[in-house]
Length: 264
Length: 297
Image 1 (tube, each protein chain N blue to C red):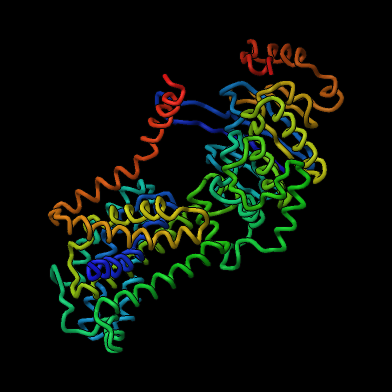
Image 2 (image 1 turned 180 degrees about the vertical axis):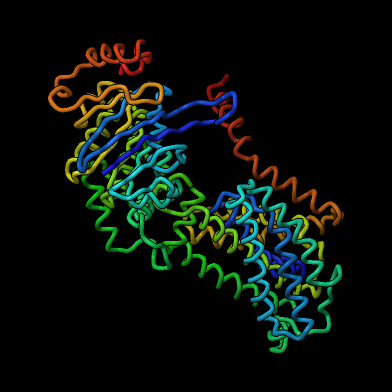
């Protein structure tokens, strides 16, 4: 479903601040596969996700989604096949628009937008049904501005919006990192359920080792712009945070230097 | 006094059209678009040029609208395709329009005293000039409010609103934000030019300088409307724009009446807008102060 072929991304090319964010990264996701991507700050995990989403153009290599080469497609054109949830809960929704208006925008992803009504009564019922599954009471607040919602509520809504059109690929960019631990677990459980119910191909970036182990079918670790570790199947099921730290030390030659990944 | 209020009402209604245009860029797209200063004159220039050559005044207004669309398109292309910051893109178009407007008119001003204007139709029905302006102003503002209320509820209208609210989110939902920004700027400047055409006909002349300060007047009207008439929903907001524009004119009429020299008007307007825009800052100072008073510190 996703095929990243030898992608290289260099920021500030040919300047003193040159930074190779991705170095010859290749990654394949089969249909229906749920992969967690972990790494410290500056490992390139978010850059990889943004390159797949089309936020940054790549310097070398190609990106193929569902058999289609999207390497040179704009961000908004790729959005047709992608669902995205961002780290910052503010990023994924339009704060001054209503809940139903936000969902209507998502429902029209990939369609030509014309002069027919931006939202219809029939849709509203559909949105209510969907919102009910969140169990947050949002189904009775269709005409509430999204800006009035809490971070967790906004992430849950963004998740619904990202999956409302059954994307070919779901990209989750540390989407629980900005939430308090309890809400974060709720949002992650919700993600798990939606992914399973719709059999969505998913790439989830996280810097939390426990989350990376607990979720998904395969775990990938990045370090200095390269994929250094891949664990899947039975091996992943038995994996512990301690194992992961040891194996990270073995491949990188240093300690996994981020307290937050251990504490949370 | 009634005469003064009537004058403020008629002028305010025409400026309401410009205020709606400014609202579309400033509030919906979150861009301060200075093209306005040029496109208002462009509308006046096109209307004056065509009317003095015997065109139907309403057709002249339509041509002015098209000219405004063009001005917005240029600013939009400069901003989205050439990546020039929106403020600068607007300034560039504004300056370019100064020369273009002079070319359209052929001189610095054109008189419309001895020709039929859009208001003549109503004057022939027995109204005086000011009533005719009010009637036509109400028709235009009412019609545009209705059309825009519909438009910003359509798919494309929602896409424009989402672009101004959160461009990152808009792109993630498959919206081409370059297109929506250009479209918003075009509609805005189209309306502003329409307003310019109507103002020129009501004051019986078009002048190449008449746009100076118009963006500030537009902003002042938007803010006055918001403060006095609220922003509960989109319909109320659109109506508040017209009310804001009229209120602004009434305020100006009153301060002039109280003896403020007309030359100080722009200074007065600028200070008003600066104070209104900085209200949130003052409030953030005042609220903790009030609280500490209550606690008796």
